[in-house]
Image (cartoon, rainbow, N blue to C red):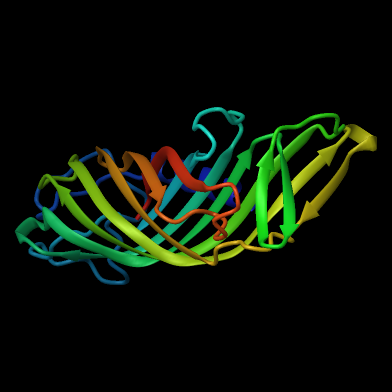
Length: 246
């Protein structure tokens, strides 16, 4: 909820901001590419200063998995949210090629309405279809922190086409199954954190391509959620929309 309020506020501020410049600081525009993209502090920027982009990026994503389970069979409400705070390091004149490096937080939610079962010998986790259980919703929720590295290509203007390709390596801070029974005053929520073989390491590849402050986003995790070979093998997928506000 807090993340949603922050995103809406930033979008409103981005919509009303005006009078910005291209990558060389020359041509004025009535359309600001992203909220605070050209913020320069207490002093105006020098005209020759190379403009930087895509330092604060939010990804709104559909979350899924691939492996022992087929993709695109989960509920459409499997919505996640990524927050990326990055340095934009120019590699060329006009910042048409750059590196992006920083810190990322990833909130994953997959509504699958199946059941996770656990075994002790070996310590493993399996996903099985719902049978006679009476729950209404079952959602896999996870929080992860990672270090992203991107190679960025863009045209030299504020209204630029861009393409980012990169990867992340990080730590899966937690993951739990959220089961919901009933609704209204009879609603009961049970959270189960006890996955015996949750993989603490994550490493993934991602791409973004779009125009100005907007881009389409896709990501794939190379390592499965559960580390034991006897477990159901699930590799995370994300598809969504990115907005760059700084």
